[in-house]
Amino acid sequence: MTRDEIRDIIIEIIQDIDEEAEFDGLDADAPLRDQLDLDSMDFLDIVMELRKRYQITIPEEEYPELATLNSCVNYLEPKLQSVAVS
View 1 (cartoon, helix red, strand yellow):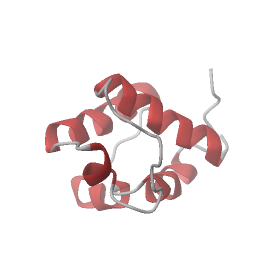
View 2: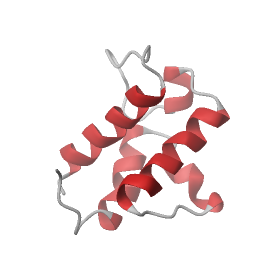
View 3: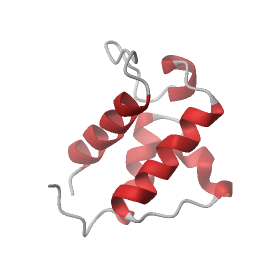
C-alpha cells in the first residue's frame, strides 16, 4: 500500500466519522484533532475503524503517533505494507 493510499484511507475514515469535516487547506503536519475539531471519541472511532478494516491493533501508548496526517501515514505504512487496497 502506498503512502497516498494510506493518506486516502485516513481521510475516508475521518469522513465516515464526521461527514462535515473540511479537508481544504489541511496541514498534514498539524494536529488533526485541532484542525478538524475531532474529540476523543472521534479519535477512538478512527482507531477502532482501522482495527475493523485492517486488523491493526494500536496500543493506547502509541496514539500520539496518530496526531497529524503525516504521522498517521508514517505510523501505518509498515503495518499496512502487505494490505491490498480493495
